[in-house]
Length: 88
Image (cartoon, rainbow, N blue to C red; front, side, top):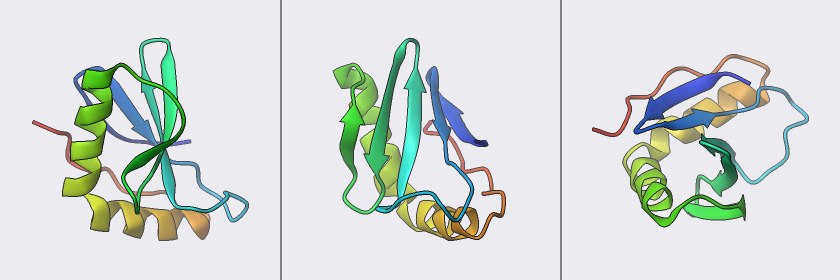
């Protein structure tokens, strides 16, 4: 599962493979917490993060939604998604 971005201690990853389930989503890791975020709706699907980190991830998703969806298509075809700029 490649890391596509990192910012403020948050690691963003996306699984690659045709068996990855919809909806398009990313895996977020922060310290001992992990969560899945829906890319299209910019909402938490499962897991939890501290409130501050959740807000940062949601803002990042909104900024990079088109890139994330393009990455999802690559990943669905078994290709490695590209890196996306971190939140600054």
